Image (cartoon, rainbow, N blue to C red; front, side, top):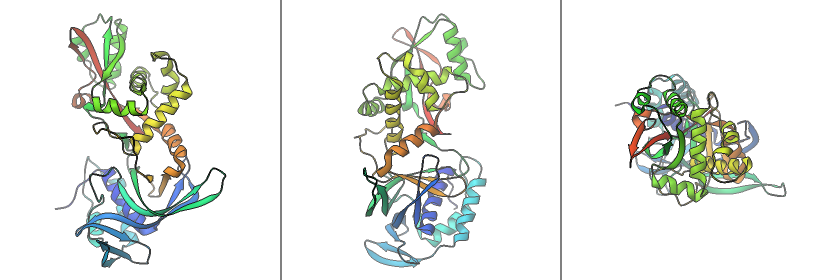
Length: 358
């Protein structure tokens, strides 16, 4: 039976196949242009039909190793990679099949892209990474096993933070004098923004109360004690600001809403730490220990080119994310937010966060 995946999942397969073909990945600047520096890839660690395997690409043919022993040599048709790209770009629906992908996976004797579902990285490879030290001298890391996340722009802009009920932020409604049932019935385009507007027009003040999920709250507080409130108030600004959803625009407006004194630069720094942590493995419902994957992030652009950010130049990655991430509105019915409800004799509304690439 043909495999069916969404565009992001097919993009992960494309990324692995493209690396096997090219054997190197350009390092990106904050505009996703190549800096003319390259990661040299020696091996990819993928799940073959024989189990966890190393795909060695140091020789002209791909060598498949199982438990350190050569199993067989394989080859890829570059034309198949181009066809795979085109099929992902033109695919439709939540998930879909791609016949050429089944052929490629058969040629590679590949069972899945991710070798181990328990690790945070989307792809693991042995690579030699370039970097510049503090004095400006150029070095290479030498061959090391590195984990990378993958963000595929092929055919659709990916999310950075996937939404769930765990990503709800709880607001208490003070001084609200309107009809809750009427507000909850407001429907149509931008309905949550309209509901928030009507609450405020009826005297309601949104007071940040808590986060719905204790684990997600602990993860944010590990970055900064005040981060839950900062993210909550950015979320409130998003739902009350027409047409502005990018992070720099929202950060400029959030300071008057915070219960503590701070500066725009301090908030920007904390938000960069937050989105970088999300990009490198922190998940809302899994208690985070502050550790990130050790390689970086690979981005598959819509034209099929790959670029990457390495953790040896983490500041550039943070700057890129900050300029290219926006707030987005997920499904309210599925994630239980945007409606007024009562608890302990008081009224509340949940607002939900989703972060997506511009």
